[in-house]
Length: 423
Image (tube, rainbow, N blue to C red; front, side, top):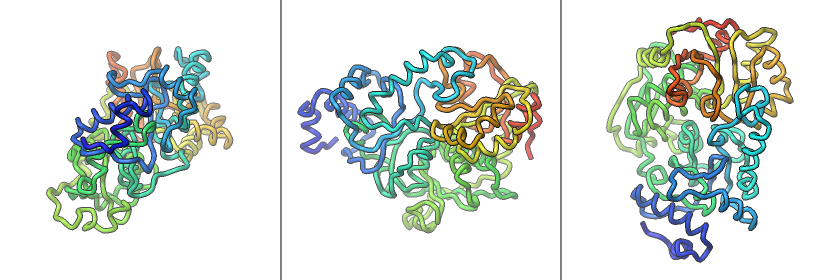
């Protein structure tokens, strides 16, 4: 990989041991990805707000290195936001989760303390899988970023028109650089597949877009599609679709003519070329996905989990209205980001929810927790991603999962019984 003279000096240690270590990681990563060079980040970075932020042990940044960098007053080079902590823990509402060690105040303080040096260096503690909704600062079209998280990657590329691969981390934030390959390059961003929704009913509900994303992702893999005939998704529906596109498949970039910043027209999406492939997603594909996600046999519900990706304030408001004045017969957790949690408290929504016996929390997902997990086997969820992850994360426990709309799931929490069905 070609380095500038400045980057060579960083690699050689002229800016210190930590900068050299970060550069060694970027070089190894770039060479593995066949990148020709690094690119300066002029957008934003996200990293998991927790200890040892790196995917590979050989290049792991240690706690001591982070603490020492913060003590020296070093700062991240670019605006940096916190994804949900890993390993997962509950930021708000932990006191009543009834699982250990997450309900232990000392454990909670210890986990929060781990993040203080990163915050001192400039990490904004959004602490959410959809940190981009509460960051208050977005990269603009054409800027280079380094993000992670399934729903976030398509949001950056397709919704904002900024540029990222799946690689957010400490090293990128510290040096303000990232390997320049794949979706940082114009030619890799163009659509190659024309993907048409050909259902006999339009996509209208959150669940429609969640199922469409999964079904499309399965057929597309990691190809870049242009979507047509998918209607006008709301913000919540975009987040659902983006998340499932990156779970059923690995769709990190797509075009919707007139919506995606770099695709005013369908011709723009394909850079004036013809599609290499055309596929259709039908209502039958959505129904097939729905039944695949419903792999439970027992309709008596132990636990309902909502908030994957983390609920926004409108979703919490809707859930509170469905619950108001009633009483839950099954355990119900609603997860959001810390910033939205604070809004829900101010609006009285947390009180409305918790009077029903449900719990409003922030910061993680149910099956990302460590230590004790909720002692249940029959779950209901409204997110295909969470449904899919539960089987692996809760292993070797044999789980049963029901999947449906928010309304289906809250009905299950209130009655203790699953009534959802394909409509």
